[in-house]
Length: 244
Image 1 (cartoon, rainbow, N blue to C red):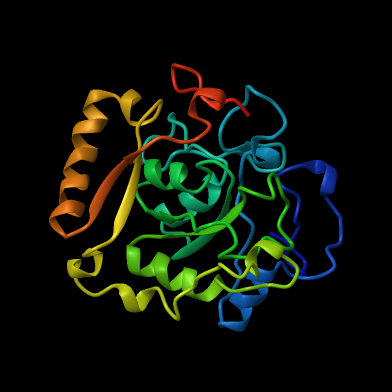
Image 2 (image 1 turned 90 degrees about the vertical axis):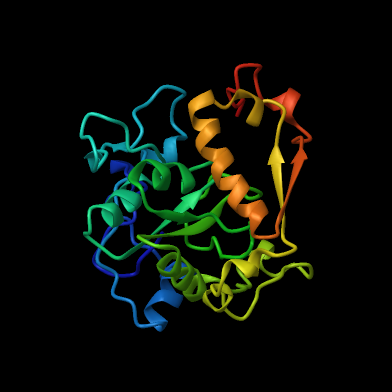
């Protein structure tokens, strides 16, 4: 995410070292406007992992290897691993990352923090090193849901430089933090649970934990709807491997 200051915006690569960005990324502009202090760029999978099929999550030429804060020999997952680790390690209260496919939610999971990956177009991608126009989304990290939601309030907004953020069907409430009331807030909500080559492949131990969470969601009045991804058989191998 570009910052128009003395910091470097490189995607973890030496190739962009010294490059001068024309202006702050849109979300950086919104953060500064909200009074945030930008402490630094975090480490990541170099080029968000789009340089090889085999690589180490959280490694970049410029930043070296990001470590899992709970066990230094375990993967921090990626690609926005440094952002998640910085929050989990109490270096910063909030951080931001780009997700194309699990790059926010996976590092958040293994670092034990909250990660929100918004619907594409809710947050602007202008000024952010891209991968996919149809999948990239800028998300937030926090140590609790309220922190992550407040961060989303600060960066969500339409931007003329990102056409996905200005489509007529785009929906954005005035504030996400205002929806954090009681569990009754989930009453009537609907959640899709992808089955084919997703849920059916979840290891038994993980599935038992997830089922407890799904039960809490149902008990709060929400509905869990089994669905299948339209491209499941085309894009996902029988063992669950994703075909980029």
